[in-house]
Image: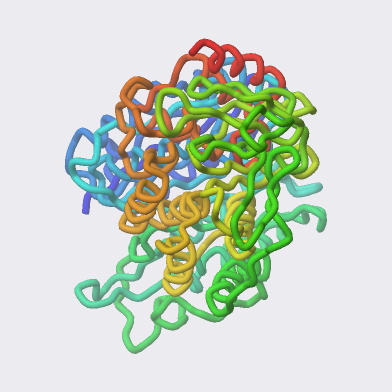
Length: 582
């Protein structure tokens, strides 16, 4: 297998702190790559070490040069520099960031393209922080995709990512106090080079059938715990303050991929380092953080599958003055007595309901808003059976939501943040179990903790894709998890069921299935709302070549910290223009 590497090093980004260890990190990774018998022409450095400027175009050109060969079986993309995590996506900052909002690598979109680049395996290694950006300039960073847009003709390939830190934490460059060597050290990179050079027995595996005579380092989730221990040990060696810690994370899409290979002429049942041939299941230190989060998600899914949860019959929040269950049917009256006969809503109208926030304005290009009240509004769809509504709340923020005739769209807020969305028939009983699952999946995506084994995937599919009582938003959240696990069959099943239930498709599901690839707004009849519902999906639009109305596209820089698309006050002004034009 022909292998190649692109090594990206950015020691200075705008006015951010200089990162003095970047040069040594790049040198160490290059030395390792050449020792792995990659040719000099197959190892490309893109750095600012000699005073240059690193642009997205530079990185894209290097990757495209290698992909265009058509012979590369594995491509390793290494990055050392500043990183930020915002809008539930990762951005690696290049030289002109944040002044130039495109001068960053949009990792989410880049991974989407890397899967279709015609390379059998792509591995990303990031020695960068995963902390939130601060300030207006940083929030405007949307980044660029740096893999070529080759399309899915050759099928999808697995991607593995080695993060230098957990979500929300820093990747450190440190100097030992009083050390004779004045250089700063990239802690994660030093550990990774040691691991990838075969010096850490716990991460080595003996080759299987057809691989006799070799030992491998593979991308396995279990290596998260081992890397954490090794990084902790390195920080101790450097006499770093005990309050400083760093926990790497491994995110493989295939655990059979290997990143380093070594000749091994040993015998018996032991791997090169004396560990069991399966890679060494025992660990020297306990690890609880990520495993605990994973176990919590998985156990709750199994628990929800095992037991029947009672339906919440206390009532379902509706528009002003309504939302009460009578014999299992939601009786909806017009908010503020909107002039309907006997106060009852005509069955074709959609209902918007807010919980935990006060509605101050509702705008829809697809429906007439009938006498909105503080907790909701009726919407009479005019051009189709479904559409979009833009709702502004009393704190000045706004949300974009889908509306469907004969359906209730419910938005629940906690301390001003949009926390839950539900769309369903006005006559359906609210399901406490579905609400729990929606909250669980949204919370897990917030902290990057949703990792499921095969049984847990089956449990989630059984719970979320129940044709007899489909919850469209739960199906969307589940499909987002399935997409990350490369279960395209389940993503497609979710899309089919939502289409059948609503008669239209949710924007995010159409995005995940590829139905929106290469489209412009006029091509998307029967897709609602007009933009992604989930914040994390905005960063996929470029990779999928999905165009929005120019005003809507500008909203990406004004997304708040909600899992759901929620806009700050500046974004509200832009959205008013976009939705008010139609």
